[in-house]
Image (cartoon, rainbow, N blue to C red; front, side, top):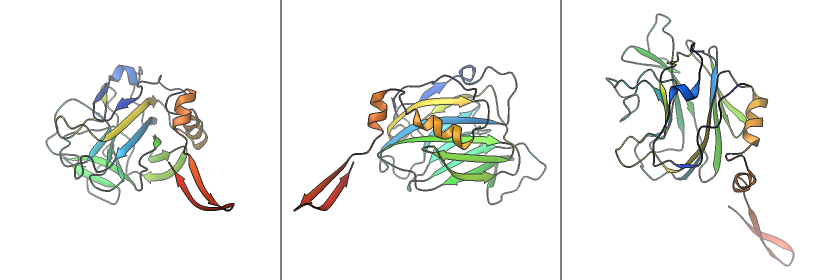
Length: 236
């Protein structure tokens, strides 16, 4: 599976990172089949409560006329991955090639006459490292968490990509406040779609590529026993 080198180390989600377009792909052709992968750790969802929390936004530098989500002026995104303002969920927006009918539907929204697919994912884990992968192939958007395919969204068109757009990691909506309280690591771009086995293999490598990251990605369970019988268990 052809892909980029790991572009980032462990970084605070309170700081925006910029990955230049030339580092994402050297191809002169914008393919509609591609994948993005990033690890993230959300320490506290209540930080910036009520404000959307962008995780990944790839978009041209020109300012949009309308917000993609409240406070985020971005258009022609390819994609934008945004964590919920209140609930632990996620929306993934991807610009689509116009097929002639620009109208809102179950998975499609139209802003400034630009058509986007919106793929919704619920129950995003907190206080643990999570491997997130979004993969596009034709008219399908596959979402993986920790190596497991959890959602497939059928799009009303194929993904439209601006090959000259930079990728922004955790660009906060409110100046000086960052995106969310936590960390990100190991952003990678792949110039092809990803299948479940490839996604699982990537997840098994861990977020830091060494024994320490693998250790930190584990959970520890402590059992409290009385007279040989387990009374309580604590997992952290």
